[in-house]
Amino acid sequence: MKVLYVTSNGGIHDYRFLSKLADDYEVTLLHYAANELMNSIKEIRGLKIISKKPLKKSFPLLSEYFHFKKILNEFRPDIVHTGYVWQTGILAALANFHPHLSMPWGSDILIDPNKSFLIKKFVSKTLLQADHVQCDADEVREVMISNFSVDGKKISVFPWGVDLTIFKPLDKTGCRMKIGIDTNKFVAIFNRHLKKIYGVKYLLEGFKTFADDKNDILLLLLSSGEELDFVKTFIKQNELEEKIRIIGNVPNNILPEYLNASDLYVSTSFSDGTSLSLLEAMACGLGIIVTDVPAIMEWVGCENGIVVQKKNSVGVSNALNSYYSNRELISLHSEKNICIAKQRADWDENYLKLKNIYEKIV
Image (cartoon, rainbow, N blue to C red):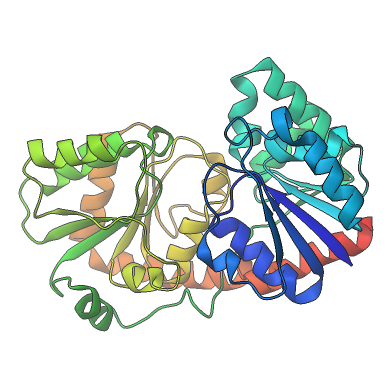
């Protein structure tokens, strides 16, 4: 089977799909984005890559529609698989190519259509034209049905999952020694992008309050983004240099070491689909603090984590204190999170569901 995989990203999420697909199909990656492809994608054996920067960042419809049509005619795929609905899915929809699998990423359904009437029209056109739609959260499915009149029978919901051979519990002491963290520290990790949508301001304010009377705590920021300067300024102004460490992005193969060196994972997002960073943390057996985003609450409740209100720094501080003062709670949640990850977040198992969709619509 010949697969044309079209994306406007080219990051770790695409890598998860492409590394699997390239083993089973003849795959051409059509990459329309201003940012570069991650090296791991470039190294996938047997994958043909066509990378072209659009005239307008991440909006190839304005400049690349005829290029897309040309690739269709040359490659003659058996299926087109598009990611991010209004950026690349619209190309397949306007070309009226079938079979077309549309793969929403979350924000393209939950947030972007509210910003622009034109984006909403593009999303509607793509979802209605697609032969099948695969998403990673029930919330995304319900919004597509209610807001865009998509037939629920053509929507499949399953998480993209994680590689449980990589993301698994490791020796905490060994991981801390390897990356230079005091074995006696109480460590929280945040590895979402430093963007406003991920509530960075509330994370920092909550952590500052939590950290005021403690010297044995550490927050790891494994991220970068538009809020980086704000983060650096906040740390300096509040004299938190010894308690917050900016690591930046790390390769996926060493991320499990940082997760296993930590006691708990924190996400202060305002909106989300099924967060892969959350699933990775669960698979490694961390305690979990998340905000009350519907798609995240499909995974986390009081039995395996602590859920706080969005935009609530006091809630973040209280949650951190709850784990800090009750280490047995971390152990309890750790066991449950590992079990949930094995049952629901195994990418090897969930990938088979994607293959079944391919066979069905082709």
